[in-house]
Amino acid sequence: MGTQQISAPPGAEPVVSGVIHCNVRHTAGFTVIGNHLAQHRGLSLVAVGLAVHIQSLPAGARVGIKRLAERFPESETRIAAALRELEAAGYLHRSRVRLGDGRIVTRTVSYNQPGADTPAAPVTKPRVARGAAESPPREPAPVIPAPAQPPPQPAAVLVPPPIARTAAPAPLPQPQACTPELQRTAAALLSDLRRHAPQLVLSETDIRVLVPGVVTWLERDSHPDTVRHALTADLPVPLNHPAKLLRHRITALLPPPLPGAQDLAPPARPGAIVIPLQNCDRCDRAFRSRHPGHCRDCRTDLSTAA
Image 1: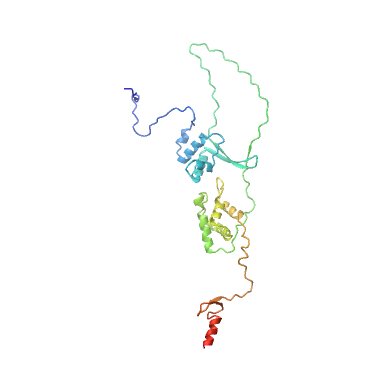
Image 2: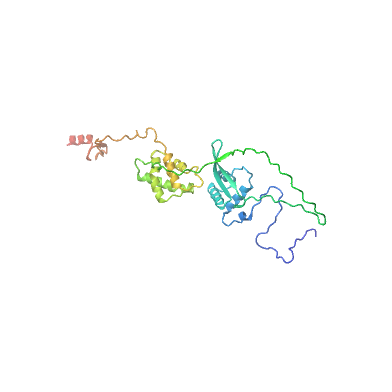
């Protein structure tokens, strides 16, 4: 008897399927999100959730890919893809800025409604009670201009866009001996880069062009993991030309040969005659001769026995 029965208004059919909302009015600690974001048909669920999270953060919060990957279970690859979706839809704008101490950081601007200007505060008109005489409008108070102050110096300076390259790029390093085994290893390493960085998708032509440079790294005793880290670490966002970036890194980051590596196998003197090694037909001992046969000891024993 003490339980209050809640009934639907006359003429309205009760909701028996689908979602049923049980809403509580928030008075603190909430963020207003538009339905244009929450019900966006062109964004993935990861992108929508990431946009909601970013809009709920205070100004100055760090929203880098690594910081978001530490906060959420999604990988850095999925978070980077979601950020690109939000940039394409106009909810985010990221730019590289240079601070006063020379450091370059990423500035992220979040828009809760892309393409809309910030509305001005509405002017409310005082309400007058019914039946009361309206007071004559007051004259606005004179506006006293504030003293002119010098504009504040910006704390960050936008990095100018890169200037188009006019000089030809440095030639790709060439190996001393591009053996088939090294070629296969280099081609497999380049093809596998997209597993570690989805932006590094190369065509077969790009791989054939870059293989000699990677073989040069392998000739200089560079481990494949070392080469892979040098090619995939700290990739720019967005990456428009992966093959050009890899060509630059292969050329600019090429390590020098190990000390003494060239002394291990000195080149043969020009004109020197090298007599091949043969195995003795009797004792299987190695000896130098142009023709197979017996070693010196076996030839002596055979002559003595004869």
